Amino acid sequence: MYRQTLVFTLLFSLFTFLSATSYSETSEAPILDLSIPEDRPMTLEEAENTPVPIPPNREIDNENLLRDAVRFKDLVENKASQVPFLILPHKPNYLMPFTYQDRPNDGPYEDFVGDEEWPGLNKQEAAFQLSFKYKISNLPGNSNNKLYMAYTNRSFWQVYNDKISRPFRETNHEPELMAVFNPEWEYLSRFYVSLSHQSNGQYTEFSRSWNRIIFGAFHITGNSVLGVRPWWRIPETSKSDPEDPSDNDNPDIDDYMGYGEFIYLKLLGPRTFTMIVRNNLRQKNNYGAVTLEWSYPITPRVKGFLQYFEGYGESLIEYDHYQKRFGFGFKVSDYL
Image (tube, rainbow, N blue to C red; front, side):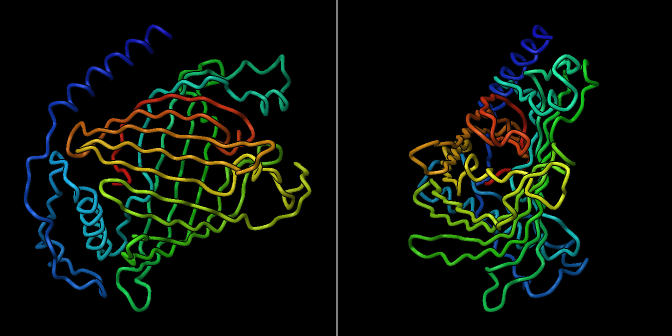
């Protein structure tokens, strides 16, 4: 298994390096300004005759690169959302065929079946995320402000573990209702308010969930995005009884997941560096996490990326479990 994993890793690294160094976007055409109004659905004839917007050339590293990328994404989403029943990407959609975790969280399963009966989780597993949104309507007064419903699924798959029939170890579900605003003020480029429910869909002692109101604010400076996402957990009972579905599954989740996160994104030509830092902002019993990502184009439709995570709360089942993880994979949609 380790030899196969090493060979796969080396082949992937070689392929993505050659692809990233040879790929370039040759178009230098401006972003198109399509004239179909947003206050009604697009007809079939309009959809057939609508030109495809051309993305900005991200090989040219200039001070407007990130703003052009944001404008291009907004233009595509605005026009695509006029087609009824069409869903849009929300958070990044990706597959990591291989990740390595330093400390597999066997605790919940050992407690359930017993230490001697549980064969153990592998340190190697796959992970993927599916995330999409649907525009419900424009908000009154400004067509740049929109109301969305969204859903994100993140799964961890013990695909290399034949001792326990290669199960999906954990899947987190997050439906959201979001109001997004684009004021384009000097120090505030975009913000949103979201009502979020996140759960792993499990029962009794495996159940983890929480409900939050999330506020996200973002500022574009040069080719960087600075963002903060504070949240407030909607109160539940302080009792935790695994056999009572009306009780709080995880009353101390705030202690480990914190009360918000800081986001930094930097465009470096066609490549993107992303850092997400989360912390409970406590001097005593300080907990948090950091996620680092480096992505680069392989083809015009697919990116390769590397990801490193360290801290608490990578998934709900291990919100209070410290973990280090490294993985690589492919993205079919990204933040930009």
